[in-house]
Figure 1 (tube, rainbow, N blue to C red):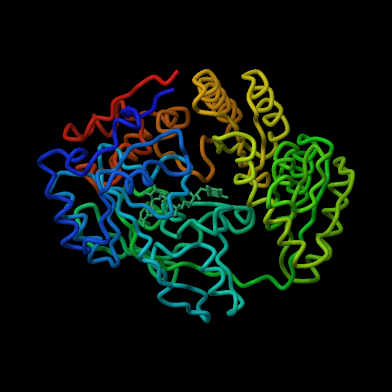
Figure 2: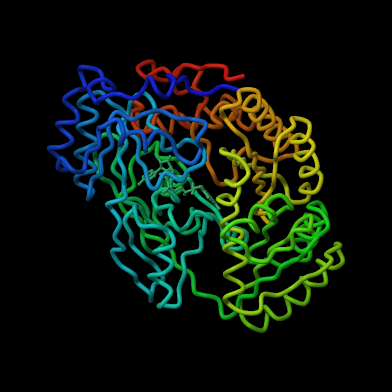
Amino acid sequence: MQVARQAPRAARAGGPSGVLGPAAAGLVAALREIVGPEAVLARPEDLLVYEADGLTLHGALPSAVVLPSDKTEVARVVRACRAHGVPFVPRGAGTGLSGGAVALDSGVVIECSRLNRILRVDAENRIAVVQPGVVNADLGKAVAPHGLFFAPDPSSQLACTLGGNAAENSGGPHTLKYGTTTNHVLALELVLPDGEIVRLGSAVGVAPGYDLVGAVVGSEGTLGIVTELTVRLSPLPERSETLLGIFGDVVSACRAVSEIIKSGLVPAALEIVDRRTIAAVEASVYAAGLPTDAGAVLLIELDGPALAVARQLERVVALCTAAGAREVSVARDAEERQRFWRARKGAFGAMGRLAPDLYVHDAVVPRSKLPEILERVCEIGDRHRLRLSNVFHAGDGNLHPNISFDRRDPDELRRVLAAGEEILRVCVEAGGVISGEHGIGTEKREYMRLVFSDADLAAMCRLRAAFDPDQVCNPGKIFPTTRFCMESDPKARRYEQVDLA
Ligand SMILES: Cc1cc2nc3c(=O)[nH]c(=O)nc-3n(C[C@H](O)[C@H](O)[C@H](O)COP(=O)(O)OP(=O)(O)OC[C@H]3O[C@@H](n4cnc5c(N)ncnc54)[C@H](O)[C@@H]3O)c2cc1C
């Protein structure tokens, strides 16, 4: 497997002038001039915090971290970085799982956490105008009194930001019915990689010309820095019900998912949690009384008009029972619903009990193939002697095989990477793709060739070059580094490859 070459972690720590080349040493002073000295971090112990995101396998120290407080400061910071020949990387909360917010090539991290205001809630038109550093769950809390909610709900929603959600086109349990973030962003304000500020899209949801909002959402911070978002809000449903189907094994839970979808029902969420994950959750602060002797539980959320939900509930119970559920229970009240969801959303955190490191995989397969692919994924984990567990958005066919491991053990690390590659290949062979919601970042850039031809990738690179011809904005992400963006622009920096295996 190919990853960016990085010096050993200890060797990379050092003062700003040690990390930045001499030509760029004045940059920190210039940044302090723009945002004030307290909003620039350059001490090694401060930079260490920004060495990685949620993917701890890939790390690189930034040369500085800057925390602007408005779009004008963002634009000036961008211009200063350019003037000093230093690349820059937008960052939200750093919960990304594909290395997207990591500053390669001693870049500067532009952290958006101080741009954290909800500027306007327009309940009548069901929109909100927000800054990128607003935390996903905080927007939900702010709009609930208006009878509204923001549908994209990543399990990290208590921490992750709307800027990060847009950049990754994040999903969550609600994706099945409501779509990913791209379906909920109407307009954007963007600081381009040359420091220009542009507005894309429109608050009414349609805009003439190219759909550049669509291009920016999911571009993983490579086309500019989002400084404002206009997002769509959805009406809170009249009734919601959460059901827990208990199954003997994960494959029969997958069959129930296929049957529910085949029946024409569109639940708000269909999430599977397997036995190992249940055990970790039940031993953690997220414990919700899930049955530890079950092979898997299927968490089902139905929402909509009260009458329709009542009918759907009956059908779902019947379908789960026919697929082999030993029991299907309905959450008794809002408190129990929340408990179930806290268990599901806390699952990745609970896995921390099993090993020091967790590699969260993310791939999509056609839903009809879930049972067969799940079996193969488990076989791969067993063959490589790994602790592999599954908790995933089953309704979307979006798998998250999670591998608990210790990266200090080189043999185990090698097996983790080998299994990860096999899993991706199996998913792609089944007609799937290499990421459902966590993005490509540095993690999967070399696997883009599994799903795209050279011509496909070159077309994407040309779009990128139109925004960022010099590749200074979050370089080294998404695209295979051995060709394409480097080849199409000889000025681009080189990201050397090293074989981890
Ligand atoms: C426990 C856990 C559970 C998770 N569950 C889910 C889930 O259910 N669904 C899901 O989709 N993801 C999930 N994730 C992944 C992650 O939380 C999402 O990708 C999230 O959207 C990242 O937001 P962030 O603010 O942390 O962004 P960061 O990690 O800081 O950055 C992510 C990317 O966005 C770019 N970026 C950040 N801000 C901006 C900006 N203002 N302008 C332009 N680019 C920007 C960065 O450059 C980077 O490429 C989970 C992560 C964890 C740790």
